[in-house]
Image (cartoon, rainbow, N blue to C red; front, side):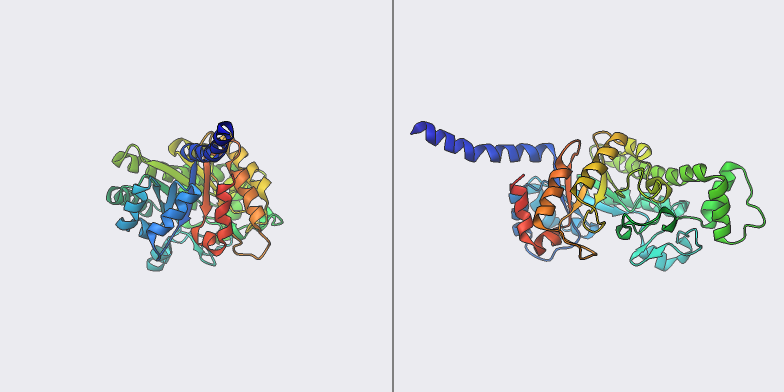
Amino acid sequence: MKKLITVFILLLVIPVFLRCNRNHQQIIGVKIYEYDKDFSSLVGKWNDMGINAAFLSIDLAENMSFRQILKDNDIKVFIIFPVFYNPEALQSDSTLYAITDKGRPAKDDWVEFVCPSRTAYRNMKIKEAEELVRRLDPDGLSIDFIRQFVFWEMIYPDRTAASIDKACFCDSCTGDFSRLKGFILPDTCVTVPEKAGYILSHYSEDWNNYRCDLISSMVKGIADKVRDINPDIKTNVHVVPWRDTDFGGANMRIAAQDLKKIAPFVDYISPMCYSQMLKRDADWIASVVTEMDMKAPGKVLPSIQVYPYYINDPFTVEDFRKCVDRALNGSSRGVVFFSWPLFETDPARMKIMNLI
């Protein structure tokens, strides 16, 4: 009888022990941008799910009552810090817009981007990150929208590489690039499409390197500055979930995110593996993590989708469970969920965390 009781107790305790061990080794995070309900109840749910990191908007991170509850429950805080997505700045100064190869401002639906080569803007954002970390003292800074312009959430597997707009071809970028390479654009290149066509046909590889360097140097500038304030702060970079073979190398050719250049400056690389909205499956998540880990070893922290978003394609609880499983397997540093309101839309998905 005593042996049966002992076995029963072990069956109860071991899963809890394994779950606690998993949570301490891996980041189990959730993105949340706004919340107007009871914070204590929210954090109680997160504890039940094993959530140990909250990726907060700046507005939520400024709520000190919420921050204290998170601290009391040993939940780390990463502040989401947007860089080149900045509608407010663009409304104040439209000359900051990135320009596509078609000659249009970099705007698609809600996505609108500042040109990444503008020195004054870059310095302003680095200073803003510095002041944010100094003022709010988070455990981590999660750097978002640090890429060239693209509305990647609406690009599906059947898209052709040529159909995706490229940026930025504003005078600042093309002028800076031509000076660096030591050439002058022909007099026949008057319009933006003509300039873009010339650069892409004569200097394609150098152009990609130039654009990628704009992004990686901005990552370095932000990371170095916030570490000057707090050497222990963790830095994470949100990246488009494109592999080398996707859309003709669009990870660098379009988004300009060269992970080998970015990885040395940050603690985590977080591909936004939102499978349902991108018409992908759970195995695709695993393939993204595996490939990115070869470029940023031990730093890949995938973010995955919780519930259907943007499009109406099916995404069942079982589909979600498979995505969680693939995200946590292999070389992954954990998983970050996009986003908390989607859990509340279907609470059955919260229970998945108790089964892994």
